Image (cartoon, rainbow, N blue to C red):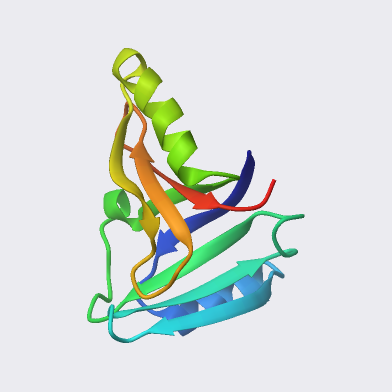
Length: 132
């Protein structure tokens, strides 16, 4: 397994890109626009996956502020088989307090296989299918 990225919701995508690239010296690695799903993404970091973890900045259309408690989105972990990892997590979740909140399947608007789980405190963790 490998840590891939951390997602943060932002109220102004360009302002966030400017901060991370100019104030912290990260590179703008790539952007994605998903108008049908009403969000845009920008990935920033000091290097690209898989060598380096990245930060995913997410702008949800029409939302310009977040309360600090809702700004954190999820941690992403790359796994070779999302469905198999879900089954492994499911087998342990009841004893450990986690849960699967989105079964393995393609991301909306794309074909990457993902799933979501939550830890005992409710923090979201995205599983993203990646080659070993």
